[in-house]
Length: 345
Image 1 (cartoon, one colour):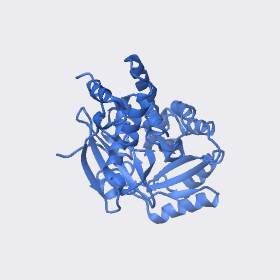
Image 2 (cartoon, rainbow, N blue to C red):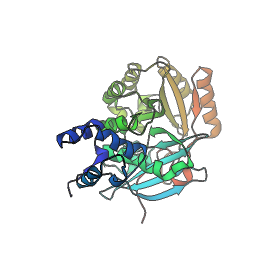
Image 3 (cartoon, one colour):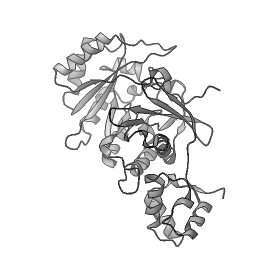
Image 4 (cartoon, rainbow, N blue to C red):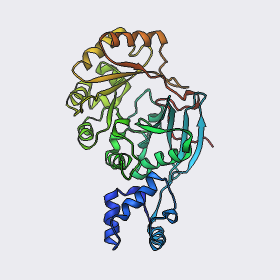
């Protein structure tokens, strides 16, 4: 019983192979997947289209992994931050963002982050470990179970704790089940976005292995500033990153989203806006401007609203689709760059 497998850690074909290896019908894997991911069942005994003998047999070999929700904080704007406890007593945070007619879940891929972006509170605590495939999926299952019929969870953004492409194999394995339209969680690839700080070697892999949307956390228009803000830029400078973007396989109608955190007196000048126009010109792109969320003890300041609007106007005047993404959940430290997975006892 101690060596039971978490069924969330198995791809569907791996579960099928296990069934066949144990002299069971392979199609049972599809049935089990439907119960686990479509009906969100956590007890094999409730899988009523399985033979009773199989329902008794499965718990001897498998568990259905859970991420117990330790706390839920709700912002004045309706945003909810979920802190879940991992098996090793670490914590990971996910953020449910209410939209007009649906919900978006900001999903974490790591405990902490190794890249140390200076504007990001998440990276200030360093890196602990990658989340497993099952832990990535479990965040979504737990939130979907928690909200029930209260809201329609349709969109996922991998912009929570960690650098998703640094946990590439587990990310792609999880995405396979997340996007499985027949037996998995049934999220459309058009509604899944993976954000990267610029881990260039894995960007081409993501475009080859998935059909999800790509977002680039850019945040500067020259290497000196980006080096200061994002140490990863010293390894993959702006020129290298944008070359990877130009070569990224985009299906018809898709664009790369460039996220640009606007920081007062750092990257918010007219010159920065005009440089951004030139940098992105050859790329099918859209831009999200994110006013910096200052937190106690940080070295940077939030920009003036008038400066963000001026920056946006320059981009729009040059025919870029440019949205100002006002961070939600600031009052519960759920805004962009504020997740730390640290519980204060």
